[in-house]
Structures are given as C-alpha cells and as structure tokens.
Length: 253
Image (cartoon, rainbow, N blue to C red):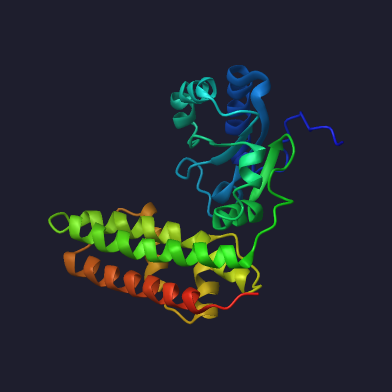
C-alpha cells in the first residue's frame, strides 16, 4: 500500500498563486488537523487565463469525512480566503469522487485535465469515464442552459444589464462542456477558454465568436445598448441550441 504524500508541494504552481495556497494550507491544517486527505488546485489559476488580483483560485479539498465541524472550519476562513481571491474549496471524499464519475464526468474531466495536487495523493489521475455517461451529461447541461437563458432573459426585461451578466455566466459554463464534447470525439482539449471556443467552433461547425466576446466582458467595463445585448443574446442562444442538437445526435462507443 502506497503511503499518502503529506508534504506541501508548491514548485509546480505558478508563482502568483503559491503564497495564497501556502496560506490556505496553513489555515486548513490548523482547522482540520488529520481530516485532510489532499488539496488540489484546479482550473484557470493554472493556465494563461489567470489574472492575478482578478481571477479566483479554485481548489478541491478531499477530506476523510465531511461533517459539520469541517464545514464550520472552512466557513471560519471566509475572510482570509476572500483577501487572497481564494474561492471556498470544493469539499469531497475519496469515496464520493469514485462513486460520482458517472454523474459528474464533465467536471471531473476538467479537473483531470487542469489540476495540480499540492498535498496528499492525486484524486483525479486514475479516474475513468464512460463516454455514454459524459455525452448524456453534456446534453442535459446544454439543454438546462437553454432554459436558464430563456428564464434569465425574461427576468431581465426591465434591467438589461442582467442580460450581460447572464451571457458572461453562460460563456464561462460552456467551456467545460465543450471540452467534454471534444473528449467524446477524441480531440485534444485546450486548457484555456478562447482556444477551447475556437477549437469547438471548428469541430462542431458552430459560431462561438459572441461567446468569446461575452467571456471577455468579465474584465471590461464597456456599456452596451439594449439592441447590442439582444443581438448578443440571440447569438449565444443559437450557438447553445446548435451545440445541444449536436451532442444529442452524437454517437459514442
């Protein structure tokens, strides 16, 4: 039986996030003691998409047990985590991860692609996924996105700025789904947002330029007219609808 790695490994992380992760690990060690199994950094903090002081740093914390004491310990860290742009860790157990690959394939594939385990054993490297399960989740997520777009647009009728926020959130949410769809077709998956959109646009013959634009709005303060937001909404909605139809018809082994 392999001994669990217990030392903190930071040298594989980008320099900009090493100190925040060191601080997080210190507080977790103090608050959780022997309940920790592993800590992994996941997502954009490990890619060229990361913007120091702007982007959040996302982590997965694998615990021996998820109980009220653990939740309280994490909740107590809210203020220092916010100062370091650290999102609250996603809390999981090893059993939960192994038993959830069939329902969270999109998310776990993304973690597997872009993660760095800094403490303990890597919880993602050995995971395997069924293409049928992943295809079904992609279809479900895209069709749910269409519902959120419709409902969100209706709710924003008197406050069109909310349409902008809705499109930003949609663009961000589409990226892991598109990477999973590329995985279904055995196409190499990019780790950055824009490259993901461009690769998926070519592979699935869909226009995603407005999705790319909406994703960049997160970092801009540009004001948009109602007409511009309506045009952007129609484009993003049409792209999502086409992607849903594409994955619905996709045959996987």
